[in-house]
Length: 179
Image (cartoon, rainbow, N blue to C red; front, side):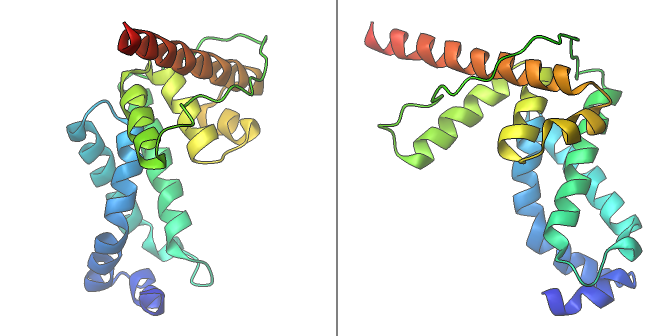
């Protein structure tokens, strides 16, 4: 695939179709983490790949396409959330980092992932966005602050709140299962 990057950069439609076929499934997974439902995720994916196509000439032929497309997808998701006013963050400069293990370690990794995704879909969008960017997309608080046009402190406090939200919901779920 990477050998056809020059054709993609030149705007070749067939090369773009191959890029879409290769990257759309993994980008859809990213979209699902930011969206509330499949339809919203599909909208994000469609808009992201329109941007990928329109900006194909800006791709660096020396670098792999995946990270470039992922960046466009994440930015598109954030912009759509902002546009829909679903991304609401509160300024709070106080924060603390929690090293709490959020998911039951006795579960199989795939079960942990499914459980986490179910929780993420129920999480308030502000918490979910910060959690996704930090924990799943490996951005720093400085990068998150730049993406979302917020302070680093707000990013940190929202992450702490997201972790607490996940922890409380997992504890509630475990207590319900025991009852």
